Length: 80
Image: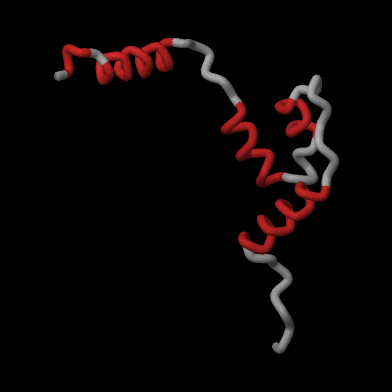
């Protein structure tokens, strides 16, 4: 009784990782960001999961072509 819990809250862990990341040196322009995040996974376990989700490019261009096609229809004279 009277002891503090040893587990840290998710917000505290995230805050610590973000602060540590902000203090880190920037990677070189020629470095591969995906490789960097994989190599630093143990240091930034939560941030690296997010980075790997958002840095991955889809393997096909079909979705982007569909977006541009739809956007083109919005701007054309046929819409008026």
